[in-house]
Image (cartoon, rainbow, N blue to C red):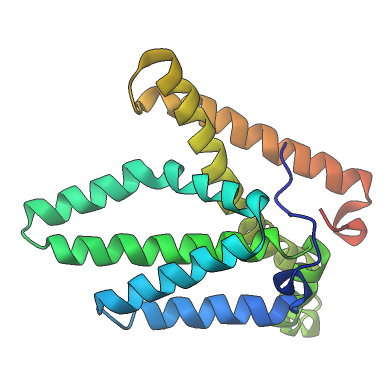
Length: 203
């Protein structure tokens, strides 16, 4: 399984995990409040510039958008049929910016740092006698591996296109599900080997 975290000592790696997560959350909320095309174009340019600042390894992660291409095309087609193409373009740009921003946080933040940043949200559970670490771990894993799953789908699409000449097919659902299950097993085994959530390390 390819590593989600991209090792380095860039400006993005040095930023505290909490700041990055809050920035993405606030940015996502603000993007849902606007319909101005130029704002989305500026945000997309900034996110792409952030990727570029990390070098080739980060730029290669942009292929995760290929995994979204079918979904994006469906959104645009629906808006075209309803006569609201511009709304479809804005929806696509919004989704691309949010996905790329979330992936950027995942690849520049160690998992234990992300878990530490998420933990305070679940501290109230401890007052009722429940574990705050387990739900925090669940949220962290979702934030961590959702972009990775899109990368897996993009790789499967490329392989399918190379074999058949077709861009995509429903037949990709089965191998994608198998890859997702395999990844979940690998993560579970890694956690178990490290003593469960208490033994979580940077990857």
